[in-house]
Length: 86
Image: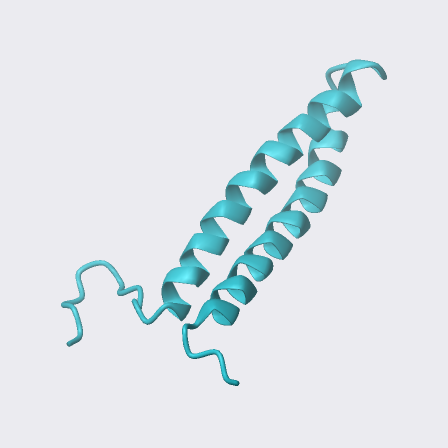
């Protein structure tokens, strides 16, 4: 039987959003680790870098997942200043 509710599309959209968040976490961790090594020593530096990366990755995952879920649910996101399509 075919799933006509669109639930699979929503799950896929959130999975992609989480993947984008994880990639952002990795890149942020690399950059934050390099920057924090200039200011702090070993005990604080990796913890601050990782905490920053987790926060940024989480926010990006939520934003990307929400945006993709809206687009796959039939509610197209329109650019600012554009009239709604009927």
